[in-house]
Length: 176
Image (tube, rainbow, N blue to C red):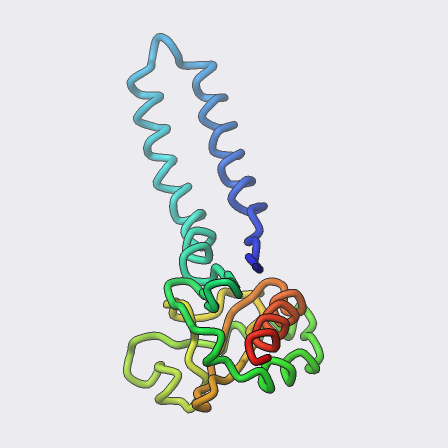
């Protein structure tokens, strides 16, 4: 079993700043101005929610789970049977060199699979992005593996080596 943990640093910082700001305002205004304090706190939620939208979308569309017992690779909202994953493509990606941070940012900006004519990965001849998202979040690495039918799949990951090692183990053990 492999579950990729998504970083929670950005979410913790945003929520901490929000709570500190609301508490600071509350010390000066509660109990006399409780109504306006609640209104301003709610308005600040409108600033907090966009800041948390990217981590929430990463948790929905880029969550990776490999379950050899059920024989599935789950990426976001998609489930791929491990029997359909080509072990040779996984081992090939495992041999590839990891990208630097700058290269990873540049590559993630170009990896788009939006449901708009001309931006679909299949229209551009690029691998289909797995998970349901429209693109690889900036800074995440992407791994391209193939199914046994030859379809290239792009998977966004935070920890390339750990994911590929776990996937290689799961696909190799499934072929024995």
